[in-house]
Length: 345
DNA sequence: AACCCGGGGCA
DNA sequence: TGCCCAGGGTT
Image 1 (tube, protein in one colour):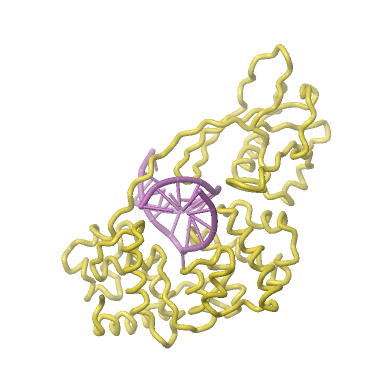
Image 2: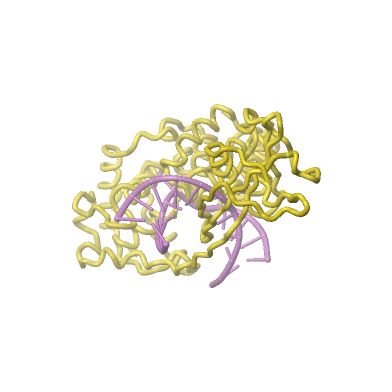
């Protein structure tokens, strides 16, 4: 456990560095608990650069907890489309309804009440409490894990429950009573801008004089690397089916499982009897977690479609597609088809 | 503890 | 191409 001197040093130097060097991000211009909450959900496993534009659009469409709670889930998913981890959007929407019904529309500040909301775990509860409510609550994310591992030479793994507990204890010991939100954000900013996973910028690090890993020339030994996950290669076919009016056939994914409730391009289309498999109009690659997809895109005209689509299919005009929560794979497939000449099968 | 869940940026 | 990112939930 860190000594009092190190704790005081980190607090003093990091807060000062943060106030001078922090990025001007949209969620740093508000204390509105709903906005802080939204930013924290969007930033789960998602970089600042990816989340920023979504954050603005989402708040423009759903400026309050009430507006979010009242919205149809498909509109929420449409705003989230492209950001990934779509369960976050479903949880956020469900939690907004609970906040309306149970908490009178006010985001709670008590830890147990926050943890009871879907999509809010210990990290997010601590972030909301410290940043929006100025409460002394620790956070532990990938940044905090990495910077404390290096600074204090802690060898614990992210994937180990007991190791994680130790990092939570350190995070709790570090966070100060005053300005806990700034301190927590300073830790993350430090990890995002200076103490990065690869080639950290130690020469410009505000706390380099007391970094344990730097002093022992072993920055590359911390944190302990995660076990590797093997990449799986998957082949898939997508069909861009158009009718005479220029509408496109899309298919709603099931309400459970991956990309639940999102709209996709059909993966199979009944081909005319007696004809052989057509040539794809093109291919593209797409990675999801440990899966690397190679997707063949086919273009089909309806006059050769000998069976009506099921109830989970819809014909949609091109201009209306933005109203649907499309998967990124579907968007890539449609873009590819737009660049090709229509080819009948 | 292991697994599932998106997508993008970068070395 | 592989790795990581302001994690949470389920099994």
